[in-house]
Length: 350
Image 1 (tube, rainbow, N blue to C red):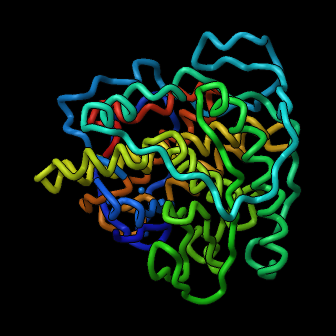
Image 2: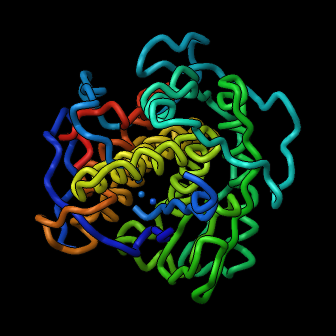
Image 3: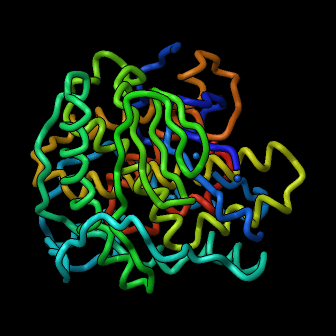
């Protein structure tokens, strides 16, 4: 299958109808064995379900992120704030020989896994895991890998409880930093990229990824972390069956526009999951509301239209505005259900 990733295949336009969110500044700036070779990217990636299968998942307006704080243990609302929930078991080492990914047995099951996944009824929680800061433009490969090693621990701590409660397994994903084009289990990978490979369930990050980030945002805290969180989001999709479900659904589509929409739903779900994670560890990492919003601007900058400088460009990751919106949707809630892009109106996944 074709590999996708951040900064790699820019594409798209058409803005989602603005809700009550301050718009980011405008800038010009894929059944069977073959499925095992799947890779999901993270650049700014996934399945395009026919719009008639969806209903709007955004009846509430999205608001700019606020600084998270500990609160009630209930998770009844879209902006619920559970108290800290430490991992119930010790954090495992990165898993280089993970269990096989779940694969739906039929198209109907694939659709169910996409739209009604058990994970959607779960929530994350505030986590006291801190990873510290790093200068992504000057850090060495070794320094980046050490930082991402700690980050992968935090990601696992935040996501293992809800996945376990939903009946899924979550191995800790290895993160590799590369400083020249490489060939992964998913194929050749260029520089200026970051991606999740479903073939070996690993995350890869190009050392020069920072060159894709707008200059004024490079020095902001948690920039690379939010990118890795997006890729980890693809890993969550893989471990919960969404990855293969998307592929099976895509195999029965014969319209390119539907395939692109499906891909955008997949990518923006990962954006949203990255937002949920960022909210979960914001307090522990001293991230202010403005800094969380800066992360949303980073996501905006890797929209298909922003990477191409063409506001009419339609492709597989989404416009900057749409991606920005879904990241903030995640930041505004601990409830994973807000990230169900597979039932969102088509206008919200442009």
